[in-house]
Image (cartoon, rainbow over the protein chains, first blue to last red):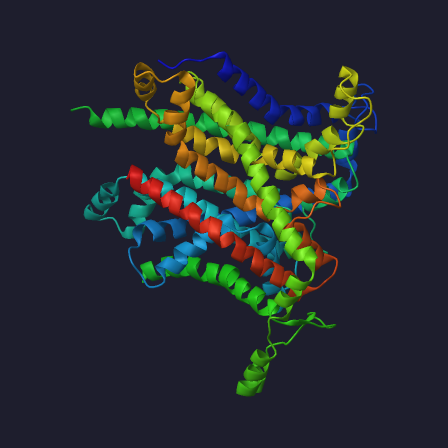
Length: 272
Length: 296
């Protein structure tokens, strides 16, 4: 019997209060009428209006989304390939180096990744802007994708793939028709992870960007350095809302998919 | 052929955008600063042939590393990064363990929801989560207003722009990394072990120390490394919540690069930071490996 004592209840209450109260305060004060963020002066949505009229923020948001969509899509393709290589390709020369290069970016301090990529881009004379941020983001997020996808690849039954090959599928068709649908949830969560990592990144983007491309985190950081501002609160609220809706939807969808898969498996096991 | 392409594409991508940049950092850390574009010397001139190559290598030296040892800003920054990372890891463990413990003891139908509540902040922008504390911790901030209202203090406490704010920021943003591995270790634990310990005369508390904590050891170690390793090179938290007295190496590197424009020294700072990180990273990998073997 597991006992649920007052200690556990207190730990959970205090813990989740600690995690959520700062964000709730942030959201509440985005509706504050006063410019002073710490004094409540009545309900107002004026900061949202000002945010929508602020060209710089809108441009930065657009750049950020473009970078995030492009880099996470390329990263998903490359990361899935890398995961497949790690799990299925067997031995090849340089395998240790390869897996090292997959895991190293996960623990690398962002300042070092950013610095090294910037020095590369300058060394080869590449103009810094959207392209260089996309290259940088793709590189570190493909490693996250490959970790997520390879954990799924390890756990699934390889004989399914072999059956498809025996039945006359080409290796590519076997991947497309058998492997891909099975690992699809991992691929999708890999994409989502890559997307949020890119959306979120300040340090690497600051190093690899040029004057032509400012992303939202860079914009927020330079505004926030001067102090708290209600416009940033409004922006944060919008971002928190998008993430919350996204995560809840994703978890409902995966729950449904898992139930459907469990049902299919039961049907398959039933003797005809 | 297909297999070759499958391996070659991600391989070459990582070599070009991960490995080669490192070689460049290493090379520039051995160069000298120069008033030129790019601002360092020597440049590799392949058109000069063998002679260019030898003169290039003979111009490289360890001067920047020597410089790092003479100016005490740098080693103080390394030490203070390590100290801040260590202290905040312990604090995160103390905050995170009870939460993970309570989650693992909650009713099974509640656990997925609790898990999602822990993961949700992780998907929210890091920058925003750090920013949220600026309004709370400032002199006119909500925490001070609240404490003044309670009558605990008579004048506002200075928390923002001190190391205390940095600790709070780190504990807050890295808490999910600590909770998740500990939770997954505790969730697998067999409760009958605790019952056995109590039947054999252990008190509740000693059963916790002698059974629960050792069984969650791997989770604790994993969580601590997941907090400790990224915290050492942290930049956003010390620059937003810390003050001028907060020395952290990520911030020093940033300033060396963007404000002082001294690329060779910035590269040397990066190389040393990497050397410092190698030990915890290897220990972390070992722990993961051991865990996999234990499960496998």
